[in-house]
Image (cartoon, rainbow, N blue to C red; front, side):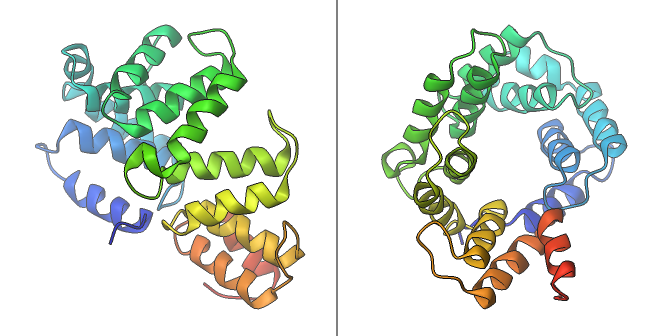
Length: 231
C-alpha cells in the first residue's frame, strides 16, 4: 500500500531507534516527526534528544561526506530548529543536492525560496517547483502529496496566489487520495461548509476528520470533540 500512514512510520522508526546501534538516518527522521507531531504528539524536548543522538552518531559527518539522505535529514532538522544549526545557504545547498534524487528535497528547496532562506525570496519560483512536484510526471505516479497539500493551502488562503477554493479542493483531493492526513482534515472542512464546489455533507466531513485525527492531526481531533464525535 503506497498511501501515507504516519502512525505506521512513527511506530517503525520508534522501534528502530531503541538501543545504542540505532541508525542515524532513522533517528533524524524520527526527530523530525516528533518535532512536528507527525504520527504522534509533538514533543520538542524528545525531538531535540533524538536529533542529538543522530548528531552524536555521525549525521553531520555523513552529510559532509556527500550522502544525500543525510543532507536532507540534517536540512529538515535545521529548518525546524530541532537541535541543529546550519547556515541558511548551507541548508538550501543540502536540499538542492538531496533534490537531485529525492522529491522531498526539492519540496524543501521550494520552502526555502518561499521564506527567503539562503537565497532571495522567490514565491513564484517556489510555486513552480510545487506545481511540478504535484504533477504525475514528477513522481511517475500520483505526484508528491506534500506538494499537493501545500498548493491546496496556498489556494485556500490566497498565499502567493489568488484565493481559489475549487483549485484548493482539487489539490487536497489529490493529496488525500495518497493518504495525506492534513489534506483529509482540510477536505473535511470543505465538506462541512459545502464550499469549493462541493456539496455540504456532514457525514463525509466527519469521516475525513476522523481519518486525519487517527494520524495525530490535533485540529481534527479538536473538531471532532466539538461535534461530539470519536476517532
